[in-house]
Image 1 (cartoon, rainbow, N blue to C red):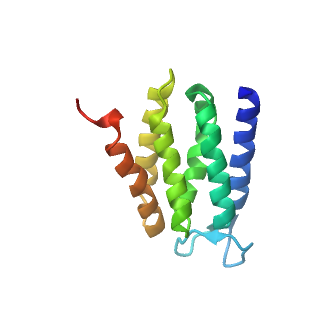
Image 2 (tube, helix red, strand yellow):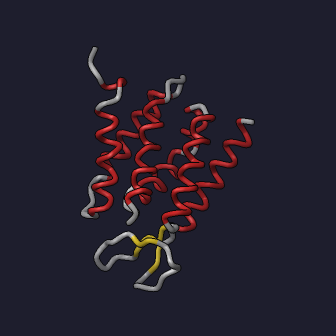
Image 3 (cartoon, rainbow, N blue to C red):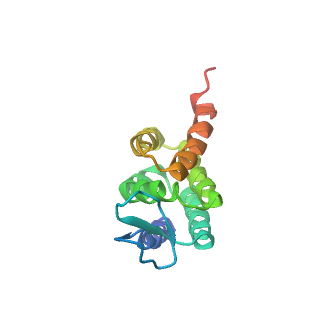
Length: 152
């Protein structure tokens, strides 16, 4: 079952990324667009589809050990960083909860995963996108209040 779960996670991420392709100009596929001045825009999947894919991702992450999540980390952080800037706040919240799920992992590879979450959030926070800033605050606040970071 771990292999199938891992394959399924890769497929879900592929679908999220397929919606996250770059488009030059205003042409659209109907997806939500990330607002960045005149730069090419990332076209994200619509809110209802994104929420479903992120919900499925959440379920899959619960079933996978950190070592398998780490194998897909680059594509995971790239996708989740995009969806932290989605125009729908519900999508940003769903995405934020994934970062909290990473932080709640307590298996053998969890410390490495938690370090990468913090690095990923701090690296991608250097943006002027208002939606992204709002979306990235949610996991940051949750992480700072998690038992992992509370002093005893």
